[in-house]
Image (tube, rainbow, N blue to C red; front, side, top):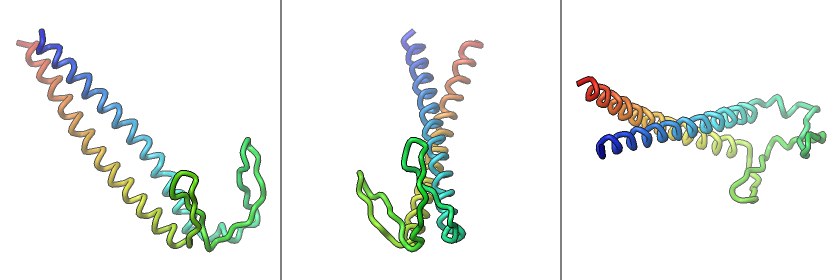
Length: 131
């Protein structure tokens, strides 16, 4: 009976781990998508020529604006921003995307390992019940 409880706890743990990894993967995918869109935007110089730039001022309200295509304001901490050249921002964003991809790939490996352990445990239970 104790072994059965231990096995069920392991199954629950692995299932929760797999679910948690799935949630983290989904969040990472959204962040990667947004980062890639931002990178694409920064690399596309067409926005610099646009006269129809709007920025959100909150509550669904927007204001017309002009862009300084040479410098980007970048958050570096809690309510702390720096102004840096567009090329440096692009490099920073590319490095962030690489880190996000590395984390994503690491999580995929962790999920595969957890899923393999879960499947092996389920198979073991099914075999022992079949005897």
